Length: 80
Image 1 (tube, rainbow, N blue to C red):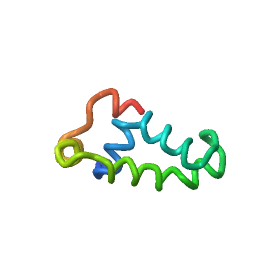
Image 2: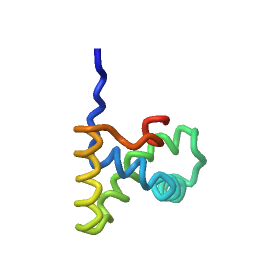
Image 3: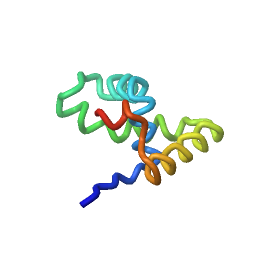
Image 4: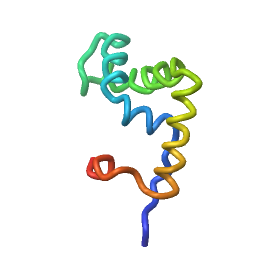
């Protein structure tokens, strides 16, 4: 049985811009990773980062999501 992970724009942004999403979440929640407040605010922070993408970046990350779903993500992504 083969497992195929469907990549979305948010999943790609969450991976590629991980540091930016984490920083945004820390600022929004005033808490550290692993705390309940941080975990609760993570999706909101991710949405904010996605919403602030330029049209060009959004298109690039959408293309990456499609490629990663149809083929496979880069090796460093697969290792995580």
